[in-house]
Image (cartoon, rainbow, N blue to C red):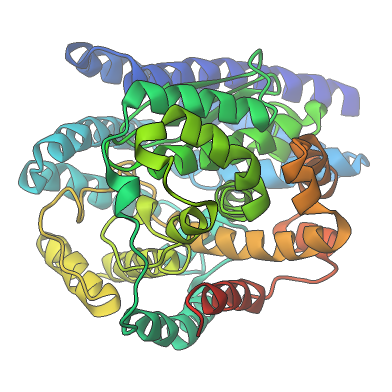
Length: 497
């Protein structure tokens, strides 16, 4: 009986893997190389394939079979996989197919409209698409039987066990400790000048530098490639394939570097999960905050580490001698760790970054408890930027159009960025006590750091939840104070407070 059910479950997973691979490939192409005039047809095809995948995934007999296997199996990995799988299916299995397909079509159209609207700095053209995605998301949630609020349900989908109560406590700590600390820094007369990093930096040269950077980090080019897109992302195709993207700005040389490292953190996680978990919920259902912890770890704890730049800065100077040859290592380190309020989340410094997430979190709460008129969303966005960061967006591109997440229907996702940053600080605190991190970075031995990440975090995939992984790797359950102390200690030293 068990073996029969197990074989049927494997066939079910194989079908889903095939659909997922096809859809992921199409999405990656649309975001990177697909001609714009062909996107509408691709969206139609993706909506159709999504519908077919949905039908196969929500087949009542198949789900009943999987539920039965979950009850009778004695295999702890299989039982955990089925528990995660069924939780992930809570949403899709109750949606009528026409509702699901309509929602996917709305999301595809919205993402395409977002790219155009951002390019043209035209929120008005995008607003109807965003409104439609929000309304379809709310409609879909009416089919789900749940005791929680809609927004608590969405938060839990992106990070198991999280809800408004827990996120409120987390963000309140940030507001109480970091907001006044940031204000104190901003009131200082002497500020760091990083204008030399905003000269003209040739895009092709940036791409060449980033290629060698990935080599330093140990990229396996037979498993991982990098493309260009407007909004960097990573997609995971199999245990032997991950695709990352980045974006270069002529007048911000560090942006592409940090984006590349951030996305490679996601890819490395995916490629270091136990291979047998490929195509299962034990890999696919890793919490978003856990995944974000590894991208933020790479971007900030490695990418801003002095020992890392002792190796990489001379190389960067060799690619841009005119711009950087006169800039000392000490000044460069101060520049790349600068803090100042800014409009763009993905370009924000470590210290102000969680405030960007706080703003989106507060708006999402209001969207889903019905207290914000959707036609006032842009105004509310601008008001909160003025409240928390003292800045009011001057245009749509640096305001509400900067992220594609809402257009993609990813509500409840943003808070995981800040939570993931906090996880990263706790992981790094433990790793630094166990490894000579600086020596490894100076001696081109990043592979030893990657091995620690694999052994302590990556390999178990979603077999353990976030707190279990944190406890195993750090000896402690999650505590936000690791993150807050890390930031305050770092910037006290940097700004000599």
